[in-house]
Structure formats: structure tokens, C-alpha cells
Length: 140
Image (cartoon, rainbow, N blue to C red; front, side, top):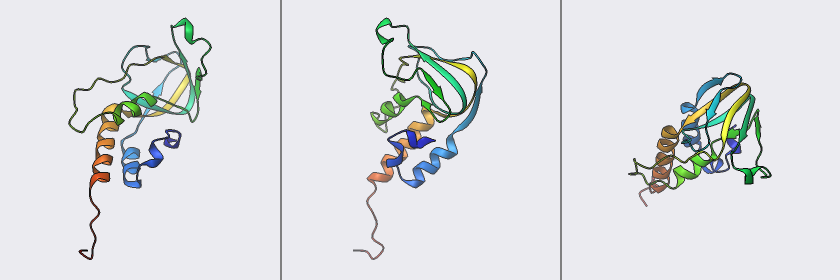
């Protein structure tokens, strides 16, 4: 499911395992407002079952190429991946990105979520692992 996030496959297996440990199950009933346009995106949602409707109040976006329905296997929250990649390890006050769309459950939705906090912790750990020099066991 996380393979659809193009940056994740570049992460090592230990980092991806940590990502899997941190995701949480969630459920939205029919008609639930998940996020409102302009509000902070605080999580990535990976849809397992159901349907989300995404829409915007801006008239110029009626003919955009983005999907307006998210279904099984889709995810919402790619802005968080971009956001976390721009953070520094000591940057704890950075504001979450604002949603450019309103997201509402069209049908009952079963999903996994990854919070912005968990994503940030995983990404910082991933960057630190990449920065660590490899230790040669022979001392050379």
C-alpha cells in the first residue's frame, strides 16, 4: 500500500518496517468530513476499503487532472511527504501543510493512517541512518 508513495521505496527496509509499525487503523462513516480545504494535513490516509470524495471550492479547479474520488488502494496526504523532506532534524516548529481540497467519506471507509509526527520521526531517523558512515569490520 505504501508503494504508491513514490519516495517510500527509496527508503531502506528497517525504515519501511518502522513505518509499518507506526500506522494505525481508522474508520470513517458515510458523510464524515476528513479534512477541510485550508486546514492542516495531519496524517496520510491509506485506503483499504471505501471511497473518499475530494473537492475544492475554487472554480478554476473544476477541470483539473486530479482524481476527485479516492478508492481502495489510493492514499491522501502526499503533501506531508513533501513537507517532511523539507524539514531539518532540529525543526520542531514547522507548520503542517494546508490541504488544497476538502476530503469527505462518500462510503464507509476503512484505512490506515500515518500521523505527521510519526512520519517526521521516521524520516529524521532515515536521514540519520543514511548519514552514518559504514563501519568496515576489518578495520580498513
